[in-house]
Image (cartoon, rainbow, N blue to C red; front, side, top):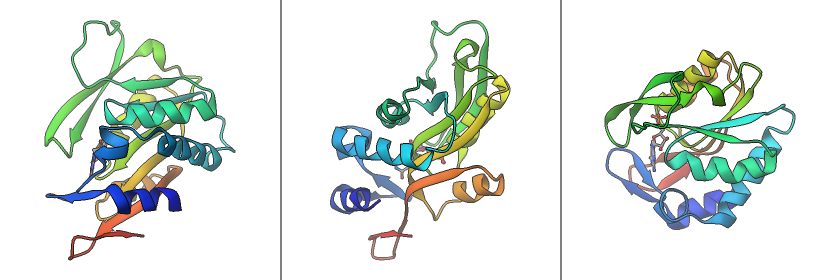
Length: 189
Ligand code: 5GP
């Protein structure tokens, strides 16, 4: 996706620990034109799949999932990381290690929002070691729902999340795959 590559080269910043900061358009300030392009691309990539629901994780997956959902015309469910009294009594829970915060979270979804008849597309902003994606897969499995694919905006190909998911024969599409070279420049694979 050339548009996204240009955006990352122009506005992305490499931070310590293999982190790519894209706060100016994806993770803090939101560039809606860019999010729309991302949503249209996901819709094209998964157009042959029957999708009934998009599943993501708070907080940074919500914007990209919500804008993308307009092109699929399906609801978005986001797994909650924070404690909430509003969650119903029956919930699905999984554990996710956050790469950027170096912390393990319980992620939770109320059972009423994932059904065994659902065909789920998981969407997230980044794929690093795959913990978030595997946690979301686990929630869908607990519900007995089918995961028809995973759409990632930026896959960091120097981490092994992509390998883990592809080994499980998951229909994974990453819009761009990035690496950093020893001059701290962003390289697309
Ligand atoms: P994983 O669970 O695959 O190790 O990491 C993916 C999650 O961590 C994403 O939901 C994303 O929010 C966050 N993440 C991982 N690497 C990066 C990064 O380089 N930049 C940003 N902004 N977020 C990242």
